[in-house]
Image (cartoon, rainbow, N blue to C red; front, side, top):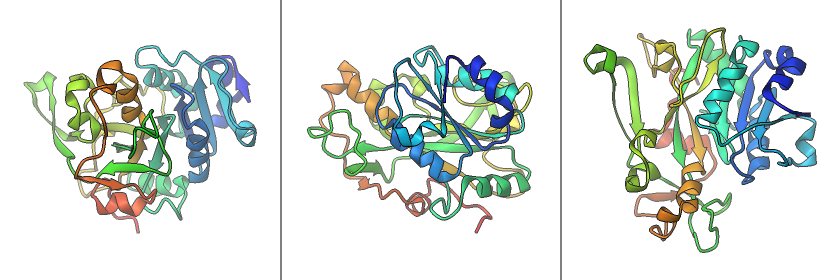
Length: 289
């Protein structure tokens, strides 16, 4: 199903999309679009919206289940802006936002669907979930020049760290239960990454509501929704495994010729299983068993 704009999509489908869970995917290029869509459908999203430039195609097997929307994906903060444009119309729905060549994982995601995850999270009186973006990269850049491979795929097992998020409105005091996360390729190759883009945390799962808005850094305008957990115990978390940073470092002329390989002594093969991420401490099942 194709739509000329977000406005056209909402005119035709807003009531259906508001049933959720809904995934919004922004295709910045044509790399692994179909695998991203297939992954989200397999995770149990009822509707998937693909925001893409004119002419981007999806495989025939996905055409009946994907809402393809023509969109300017190169605008500043294009994905948060698109989410905000849809927010009020899909109020009540759980929403996940990501880019192409990014894959959502949550504890037990091989055997449980995203609806089960979100039902449990809502029962814990949570309306959003902070996710860490875990960089994926091809092991051999001579073979996979854009750093993307679904078979020769690696990740960092260490090098992640967090620090308390400071509140500039309160003399830079730490915000309650909020953290800034760093690590992966943005940390190891920080000389090629602007400071404002080095964080790897996003609020990429949340329940849409009237007036809620997403900032360019993927935080929301309700501070409680940016917290890692509720005040009384730890909540479960998820992860977005992403080739996006590796692709960017390989497409930028300055970094492309400075980086011969993304692999280092702390690289491990990514096995596409949620348990690997739990074992490495990159997401937490909380009280969910």
